[in-house]
Length: 325
Image 1 (tube, rainbow, N blue to C red):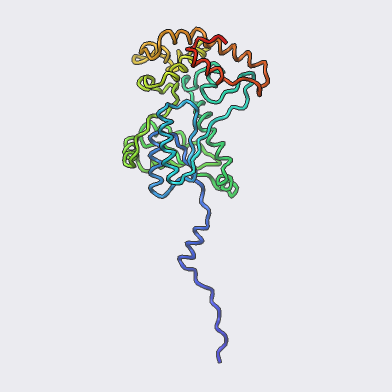
Image 2: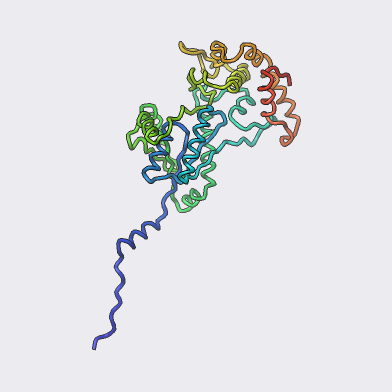
C-alpha cells in the first residue's frame, strides 16, 4: 500500500517570472520640452518607440515669440490625443521689495532696470525662468516623490542633438552629478543632428517649429526682430531705454555693434522703420521716467494693495509711450 502523494512545489513558469518582473517599479520619466526642433523630434520619436514620457513640462518665461506659442498650442493638442501628461510652468516671483508686483521676465527687467543676463554673456535668466520652475514642479509630482523615497532617481530626457553646438553643451552637462535626476540624451545615442530632427518632425506630418527664444534675447536674428509685432518692438525699446543709464560694458540687447547689426535693438528698429520715429523718441524720452515714478508711488502702499506693473504697461501700450505717471 502506497502513502499519500507527496506535494511538489510548482516550478515557476516564464509567465510567473514575467509577472515578477513587471511588479518591479521603474523610474519615472520626464521630458523637458522647449518647443524647439530638438525637443519636438525627441518627443515624437520616444512616443513612436512606445517610450512615452510620464510627464512633459514646458517652462514659459512669458516672452516667447508669437509663433512659438502657436506651435505650443499645436503640440498641446498632439499630446492630449496621445494621453500625455503635460504642464506649462512659470517662475513665480514672491518678493517684490518696494516694487509693484510683476509676473514674468520682461517685468523683472523693467522693474530692476537691467538687461537679461545673456546680454552680459551669462545664462542665469534661463536657469531662473526655465530650469528652476520645472524642477520645482517635479518636486511636487507624486511619481518623483515616490521614486526618491525608494532611493531611485527620475529619468530626465534632454534634447541635446549630435551636432557641434549641442556637443559642447553636452560635454559640460555630463560632468554634473545630480542626486535627484539621471539625465538622458537619446538624440545623441541615435546620432541625430538638427537636420535629422527636422526630417523626423516632417515625417510625423507636423511643421518644423520656429527657433525658441525670448523676443529680447541676444540670440535673436535681425529677421526675427523684423517679424515681431509692434507690442514687442515697443517693449524692446522700453527695456533698452530703462536699462541705458546703468549700462557700462554693453550697448544694448545685442551687446556691441558688429558689421551686420548694431549693439542696440532699438537702433535696428529705428533704421528698419519698424516703428514710427516719433513713437521711439517718445518712449525713450518719457517712459522710463514715468515707470520709475509709478514704482515710487507704489512703494508707499502695502504689497497687497499695490497696482501691478501690468496696469502701467496697459497705459504704456495705449498711449504711444507718452505717459507721465
